[in-house]
Picture 1 (cartoon, rainbow, N blue to C red):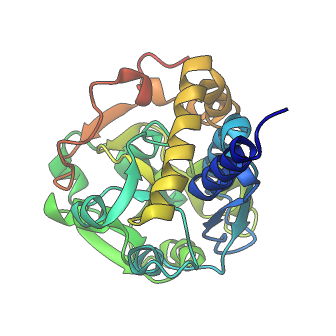
Picture 2: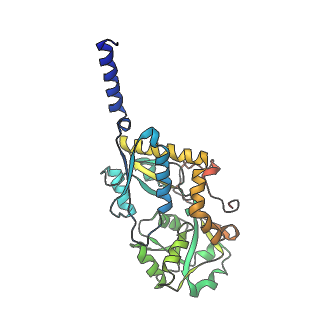
Picture 3: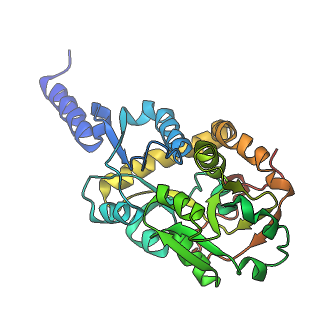
Amino acid sequence: MKPRLAIWQTTLMLALLLVSFPTLAGETMTYIYNAPESKLDQRYLYHWEILRTALEKTREKYGPYEMKPSEFMTEKRQASELKSQTGKLTVMYLSTTPDFETNLIPIHIPVDKNLGGYCIFLIRKENRDKFKKVKTLDDLRKFTYGLGLGWIDVDILKSNNFKVVTGSSYDGLFEMLVNKRFDIFLRAAVEITGEYDERKDKMPDLFIEENLIFYYPLPMYFWFPKNAEGRRLAARAEEGMRQMIADGTYDQIFDKYQKEKAQRLDLKNRKIFEIKNPFLGPETPFNDKRLWFDPATYH
């Protein structure tokens, strides 16, 4: 039989451990993410499945978790909520900016392997022949580009001398295109097929341009508040994501969501026009080729 002192010391040590590592005591880690903008908004199904799978991979080590949507927030408000550490949002999926790198906690793994940097033109059917004549970036500068107010893409295009028209509503941008407010609604390869399929019957003038890719590196990361809880949430998610990369789960989920899109858009046979993203920093993980989509080698 152990002496009472030894038993008391053991009990005290266990109590201290449970205080120091609350997940060992069964505390649920809560990931609050931005809700879809509308019923037709399916842009982020893939990304949240990546996060959910990463959290499942780490359940044994970290314990239970919960993923729940917040109210819908604009990108600007999402960033504000995270930076202000209000607790209304605890994880955000957006592209990198110098401001975010300074004031938030990132996981430097491009969630969609930068497939979102391969942009396709959603246009009006009547203009399809105009794009067959495009030979240079200056040819592309003759068109106007529709983007959402506050999107980082707006600043990227403007820094490369492209004409941009902004809209305050995601769904409204499709209406603006049809109503000739701009020539091109610039869409990521991960988004455009689903968006087109959802709207083609009600908007028969929509057309997916067939030959061009407008490319700029646009790593999209998961971001967390810059506090102890944010670091804990980020550490778990990153550990799970790296496990997924190592065991092939990441590629499996990527293929499930993105392979059909890449094939349908015939990305490997399109002509690529590349512009610079001046907002990338030295922390961008270009050297790890596993993290980046390449249409020439993907099959």
